[in-house]
Image (cartoon, rainbow, N blue to C red; front, side, top):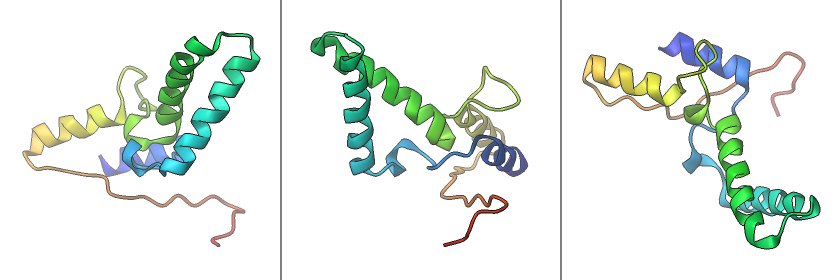
Length: 108
C-alpha cells in the first residue's frame, strides 16, 4: 500500500492528505474564483453557487490525496484502497502526511 500511495503522490502531485487539511482561507478563495468564473460565463447567480460547488468537488479530487482517483484503476479512489487495507488487516490505518520532492525545486 505504501508503494502504491508513493507512486500516486509522485504522479498526481496532491497538495493535501484530505479535505480537512485544506486551509479555510484557501477554500474560500477558490470558491470565490470559481463562482466569479461561472458568473462571467453568463450563468445566472442562483445556479452559480451549485456549479461552483461542483468545481470545488473537482478541486478536492485533484488536490487531496484521499479523494484522488487511483492512477492504476480509474474506478477506484485512494480512500477505497485504504478502506480495503483496513478491512484486510483489521487495524485503523491513516495517512497523516507526506512530502513530495521534485527535481530542480528548492527545499525552502
